[in-house]
Image 1 (cartoon, rainbow, N blue to C red):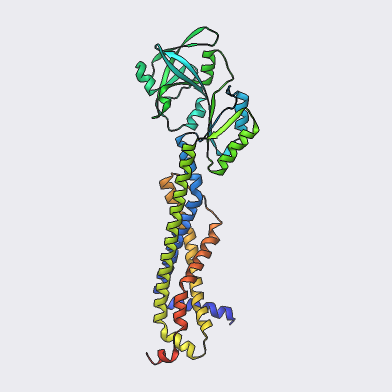
Image 2 (tube, rainbow, N blue to C red; image 1 turned 120 degrees about the vertical axis):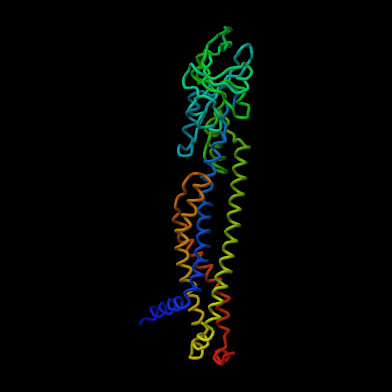
Length: 377
């Protein structure tokens, strides 16, 4: 029999003889590896999940004209071309004009409704989004001011810039509630506002919702600014800083929990292996009496630990992914991606943790005096 085959048979035989103890150690390693693997999967997936989740709270980048004039359609399309398509949630341009509703001056905002819906999903719309140029949405405070309801026709008046007063009637398709300044606005399609005011091809701002954070988002803003001296892209700090703070705290929490789990796993394995050494004192003493060296005793216990670490790590990879999938679906309502790079990391980590946990039991085993043990002391 080859030496390697004999060693493997010796290690597995020792594990099977103390299978109840070894099963406890294997379960401890598997549970630890499961939680660590699952938390690491969540750790690396949190930026993607959290950034997507926080996109529901509005734009995180705003582009305005640098020279105090207006943004043209061509400039907006150029900016959109610079944005990464796979990370762009929405880009809503806005044009603001003062109009009169029931003799009350109100700000009208013209925008592309589909982009506004993507950029600002937190808006609570009673009714429907304005679907065409004949319908508008009123902010809740505007609706209260003029006592307007969904489905009602209202007349808007404005100065078209040529010294002429214009009037037009629109149907209220929805009432907008946000808890913010949007409740003071009237919202209509950009083409409807252009037609009403008598000119086209101009916007005051472009709100962008991008599923990037940190340096990536800052770098994108810098690229937009360097592409033209006519635009100024800036980050919405209250949104981006909140994302960074929440992300940092969550990742720090996961790291702390991971360290605690690793320490508890080491303690559990060390306790179990110490009990195994205690139960096998006579066997170890007999081996040393017939010529086994401390190195051979150490190699045997280390082999048992590595075997348990590999098996526990493999179980941890599978169960950890299921654990991460469950947590992600419960919290973010989205699935996580399997990270193949965590497979060797989890297994090697399990082996390392088990090997370190076996150091104290191995020291105890090498300190056994065969003469005393065989005499029954």
